[in-house]
Amino acid sequence: MDWLRDASFGWAFAFLFLLAMARANITYWIGRGIAAGVEHTRFQHLLRGPIYQRAERFIQRWGVFAVPLSFMTVGIQTAVNASAGVARMPLLRYLPAVVAGCLIWATIYSTVGMAVIYAWLALGWQWIAAGALLLLVATLAWIRHRRKDS
Image (cartoon, rainbow, N blue to C red; front, side, top):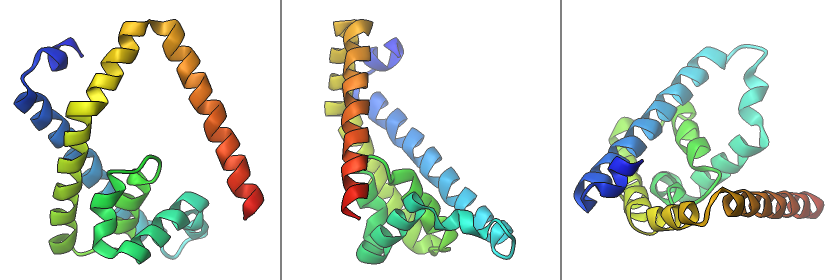
């Protein structure tokens, strides 16, 4: 990652944008393939899991705007793109939405996101491990709290 740190903002932004575009579009097409392949099989129930349902509700609430908005979230971005594919969102709607989302994501990670990552790396692996453990515990507590409320 040293080459990314040493790159100009424009090159780092372009790299992150293209990375997000590749990941999001691959996920969308995998979703389309899954929908076509699983539609009438005994595995159809896999498309009804909790993350997929959460992404589906997000898409139903926000429509095509769910795609770019998902790039500002943690945890459902991939599910939203896959859900857009499973739902067979038309490409004329999906492509502008995913471009907007990838621009948002690249902006976040080429500015604030990378600064946070480099700050963590400067602290040393012990602090990274402690922070990751703290984040894991907080996430598990939050999930448990949400399940209790449901």
